[in-house]
Length: 257
Image (cartoon, rainbow, N blue to C red):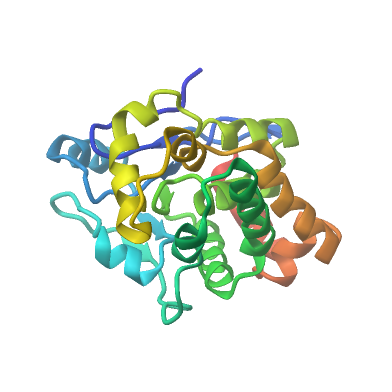
C-alpha cells in the first residue's frame, strides 16, 4: 500500500500510521510527516486542511523557519510546536557543507555522527517531549516536519513507532520510504543551488542524490546510541522525554486502533 499523499509543492508528505503495532495497529489518518511547506500551493493547503491537523511540530531551527516560512491554509488554528534553542550557533549542516569534499565517505561519516547525536540534542529533546505530550492529550491528527522531512522527522517517527510496538523492520521500512527515485528530477537543481549558496560550488549529481536520501544505517545509529546510553528506547523515552507509563498508556489509546 502507499502512504504517500501527493502534493505539488510539499515533498515527502505521508501517513506514518497504519502499521501493525503489537497486538493492535496504528490508526490511519492521524500521524503525518512531511518536508517544509514554504512552497505549498493553494491546492496543497486545501488538501492539508482536509486532514484535520490540530498539531504541527516544526523541527527546524529558527534560521530555517525564517528562510522558508510555512504557508498555512485559510482558517488555520493548529497548535505549532517549535523552539529557538541552539539558534545562536552555526547550523551543523551548513558548517559541514562548507567543508564537504563531496565524497560519499565524508557524507556518510557526517550523517552517522549526526544521527548518534540527534536523540540527545537539547533542542530536539524539547521538541520531542512536547510532541509526545501533545499525543498524550489525544487532540487529533498531528504533522511532524523538518526541512526535507527525512532526518529529524525520520527519527521522531521512528521513536513513535517504537513506543507503539511497531516492528524494527517496519520502522526501518517507513524511514526508507523517503527514498523517492524521482525526487532528484523534481528538486535536484534547487538543492544544488542551495549547496552553492553556502559553498560557492555546485556539487556533482551523486552528492546531491546522497543528500536527498537516507540509509538504514543512519536511523539504526540513533537507535544504537539510545540503547547504549539508556538500555532501551522505552527507558530513553521515560528518562529523557518524560514519557512515563501513564503517558504511554494515553498515547497508545489515542494512536492505536
